[in-house]
Length: 87
Image (cartoon, rainbow, N blue to C red; front, side):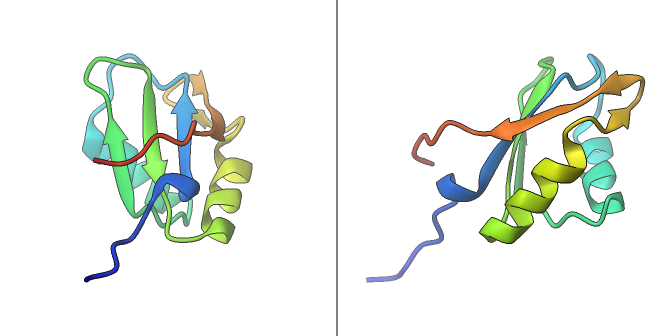
């Protein structure tokens, strides 16, 4: 049986995103901050997104960098995501 990567423990939620942003802009902002997201899930027309990282250190760095970061006039909030199984 093949071992699958489980992302639930390395997932964060970014809240207070601008009302109108594009997925590509969000990914560019994350990589511009020297973060290395493994997976980004932005909910259409929502002001939050879920971002998954490869390891605990990357997740902790993202929480530190993103919490309070100002992007497009919004002060972002980053927190641990509730662990819900990936489908």
